[in-house]
Length: 139
Image (cartoon, rainbow, N blue to C red):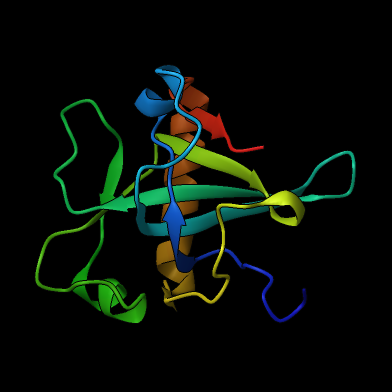
């Protein structure tokens, strides 16, 4: 597992489950989308919990918290550079690496710089402090 262990800032194709889908009773993401590994923590059972942020080309609605992805960062992450992209930071998926059936291909498509990754993490932390962070469990 050491070779395919996800690290913070890596971008994967992932069946992301939007909060509105989870609230409607859905348990599977409808399609693979680029998503950023935002945080990796250990749970009480010693498993690795992955917190994954979605990336979208759809301009976020007013009231959503999102960070625009600079073209340089999109290039680093092997994302499309011809359209505007955002990392959504007010909702995440939580997935347990050892039991994940949604993180099929653990080869990242690319990785954000450490500076941009820090910006994402700080934004998520800020949203969490407001109480507006939604997490959909994929476990």
